Length: 113
Length: 113
Image (tube, rainbow over the protein chains, first blue to last red):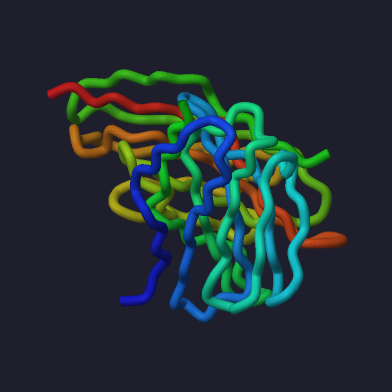
């Protein structure tokens, strides 16, 4: 089955620690995205990548970093510089140039205390 | 700039009631329009889409028509079920000077038995 996997489903960290969220896709999609979702709110774009070895900041990139060394993988690091890291993080991918819909992973809920 | 506005929730209905969730948009260029659904604790799933004016997207009894004259893409279902309880997101995607997707804030739907 093709799809997007995010792991782990739940993640707990102490304040001041960096943490990396995994996102893997086997859809052969070029573009990948990271969104943050806070309770009762919509999605905010953190970073996106249209092609391997290239990525751009989204609307709320401060305190986050990404890499895109392989087409299938787009990990997100939440650094200690992120002021309010507790949130639900969603990874998504998009296929060809003519295909506009995004496919989402199941999400990772990060709690920082 | 480009934006999506959808009705605030929560929307509470009894089973078999008629559902409408309003969505309007502003966009440069010619956007594609989408409705995504998010069940509790999960990622978003594409529910339906429309890529040009007067197109009707439909899936699982849900429908939405791309109305360019009123810049709207309202979601409707004739008879809701308890299993339709979820958060619904309206979104647009456009590729003018770079691809982007804009999501609405989401509308939570509760369906009572």
